[in-house]
Length: 556
Image (tube, rainbow, N blue to C red; front, top):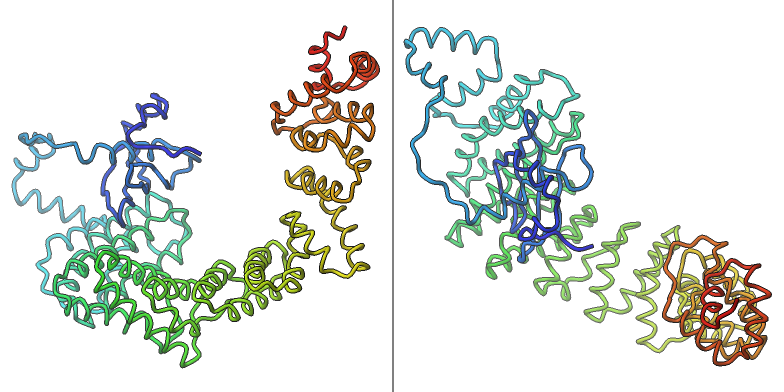
């Protein structure tokens, strides 16, 4: 599917949708990683989270919106247009026009305004909290209990203790939390290497995540807010020019997040540590330092026989592999039952560093664990590669016995035939033929493999009988001479079945080879014979092939 491009939106999106999107207000845009943007899209009284990821050529490679519309909504289009124009748009400086409300406030007496504000704050706890946060002179030393109280008061001021939260309510909560927590993060980030302050940051993440887990809402606003705070923290760390101070900050992350004392790691803290690593990718010194810390962490886990979940291990595996630390420490990594993506990546890396025995044993053990064949196929494929390189035909044949019915590779089938005892092979072949034929409708390789097998056995009679709507013209064309020589009249009749109107098939047929077959028939059949066959079958079989042949030979 062709990707949308920001520069060609007017050519690929209906003008009515573009006009509708112009009414959407995009605000609070944040680039959470390179070319990965999030924002709020205000649509009348509603506000939605939108996200876009673009590549260096302004192609949209991922997009998301928490509105109810499936597919490309006006909120995403508005965000695309915003991103397209953000670099070239400049705001002209102009005098600010006062609204009637501003004029009224400026003309009020101070005492009257104070009385009205006091009355308003008593009736609206959320506004009261915003007012206090805005105008309190902050000399506070924040602690975990204080932060917990701030978060809980902000939440309760809007939704009380309810668990079912509407999207617009959650937006109010997040907006209030953003104001409430701003001085907290300013306090914590003014001293980046302070252990207690960094603990408060992580504690804040956990409190927000706990709140998100307790409520019932389809919105991802809280998750996005945590990600925004995390990015703010990482940006502060990354902008630290002093490498020694940066090292101390990184040490704090490993002391508080990645340590070998506990085998529990929360999702938000794990995302935070990954974000820290991503921030080092353009700085070789910091990248290597982070990787070395990761290696020591992995060795500590291995020594104490502790094990994180596969997602954490996958991250550690990639960090160490990308920084040339895997080969010397591969033994710290273990397979995870049913975690196929991680296991396959580990096996591939073991093969790359020539640890073939370990890769083989791991693949075999995972095959033994998996119940469904589909999960076993990628392990069999890696074992197949190993045994081919080792010229170990017996082991290879044992693997191919399993893969041939799935991949339908005819060369693999011939090797199985060569290595398997004859009495066992007969039963295997019989089961295989039945299984392959049953998949004609779903697997385009099945008829090809089936015909290859019959041709190898010179069983053209069965091949002729097998021609149907599932055997395309190019396949039949390959064996046309043998089938013609076997029974030319039956061959012509069977050709009519391929594109018969009696069958429903959505896939297009190969018209090029259909025309080649028609011309070949005209060249090889006697015209009287063709006319007789058409007279016999044309009215009995509703076939596009026969109709085209009849037109070609002027049959009336």
